Length: 264
Image (cartoon, rainbow, N blue to C red; front, side, top):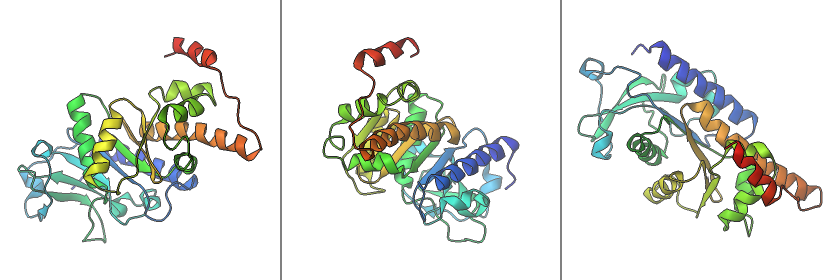
């Protein structure tokens, strides 16, 4: 299937972000995954699905007709940098939401399938559609410093303390991650439990920190989703750098952070 320039550009953004994730050591081996809702950006008709196998996969009825770019299960995100047509694929969910057709991608990998976190991704895309926001991208990766703080005896269990620590490290963190981080209890990767916890967290927060696992954010495109994770992790990194230097960081005071409200 031939892709239009809008879709090509969105995939280029995904490739760009994949490079950032690899450079930051946030995407070891096949860790992390990314998807983008292309519904409305790519015209798909019965002509395009004619003769294509239907891969059975039960999904909510509301997802019928969705067109999604998604990284492949077991694929390395770093391979999205130069060969997204091999490490990812574009799928369309059939009219009965009983499965999907692979429209594009997976070149050289006839058995390619969406990420093992596909259940979570689809649930989040459906949530974003129903919420009426413009977030098309879902990005999950392994930001080192955020994961480290999720193991902390206090921050790993006290969300308010975690956000105060991160926000107080730098004014931009309070400004660019205004809804803060939601930390979820540990849940099995790819499970419906994790999907539910993530969606509940996204109702009020910018970033979801999966305890002892990784983090997730959504955005209008791959770059915006990455920005949320990048900025939040900067707060965690500064905090840990201070601890490594032998002192607990003072951080901005409550009054100093309240002064930033004028920008929000």
